[in-house]
Image (tube, rainbow, N blue to C red; front, side, top):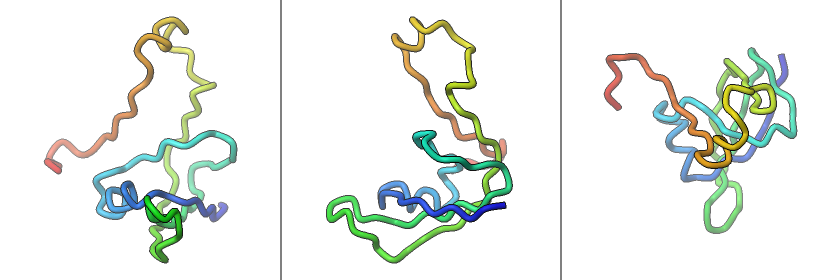
Length: 93
């Protein structure tokens, strides 16, 4: 298991820290796998400087879009993708 540090905009940091955002969408230019520890360091949206806050999350499922071939390319170009966070049924946040 590896510990990986990445920056995250303040806009999204609060959502992750509160538990409302239970996914990360990232360019797949680095490796991570289930069990790794992802440390997200908050960066101010305007100044682009670190705020000093961070949140630590364990990596679960990792899906890379290059591995997905569910839809024809022309449909992906027309509609794009959407990323959906899955929460327990009784979670109304």
